[in-house]
Length: 457
Image (cartoon, rainbow, N blue to C red; front, side, top):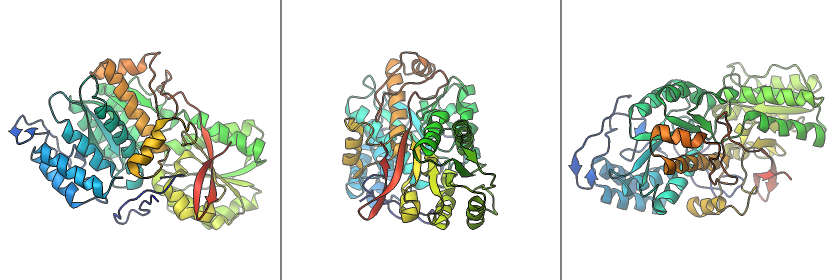
């Protein structure tokens, strides 16, 4: 069973459960020949970036991994491959090590390189969910002969979901001519902060998880593999009114999370159009004075039948506290953000019945090989962030098959006939850069001793 650490206080090891779920400085290329070939760009002075020369995910550390990054930093790639393989034999669900292994295997002048930026420091669970999708796509393409014969390398960055760090990471990426595209960022505030740099310097960014409205039509180099937020919020509102008969709802959201502000706005628009009423409560997860008990009491006193939760990804614990104090008084609904292992693990019976709108679920297309391959690779099923990160990487790889330049890649992804296979549905982009796709409703249900996300019919 796959289990992940739930608190950011320390770095416990990570294992899978069965679904439903699962200092800054510039770096330069040094053309020096060592044991295994050309020494990679040195990132030893940049603690947030690694091609394989340092461990960013400290919760996933083994002796083999430590030896591997040391060998990689020294340019001894044959030894690095050996050590990374040994590490994966001990801990196969570590995507950082798999990416480093793949990088070491194809470290040569012919390789192509992309980057991925994830919140390792502030949300290691989400970071690993995203990295698993990237690693799985990278391994598949390299095992199949690469991109027109060229192996794919992935540079990992830790942006902590911070707008400031995201901007600095983006600046480093655009300065490096070898980086052809970026998968990321996670939270919308990080993506929105970095997007102007990518657009100005003409580097493709494909975010797998940011769904703020402000990213739609942001620029010709900005894409995402999650659907537009309106298509995510509207089905949830329709389910509440037409199937669940809930016409009075209180909303608790995070005013500092642009994606969840967008979700709240689109939900309110759709809910109101269906005859629903939003009760006038003030419930903001981002405020230091947030009070779960007072929020529940206020919603109940004003006649709410349901509670819609839309927290920032790094403040899910507050939504779980609210659900715990709810004690079944109000039916629970939520934004895509709440689809995490943390929600069902910490929420347990208190989130039983919670309904969410999500972009992917393994039951959506059971014939697609992605889910089966993920279980074999990681030891358990994965969630939507892994799937959409896989799709973002697949889209970039497909575009690079047409052109391995930054401008050529952008033109390939913008082409009206662009399409590539994804984790469930094909990946196509609308003129806005959003993905053409539809939402799926899931509900937390008890199965055996666990609570899991189950797709609703």
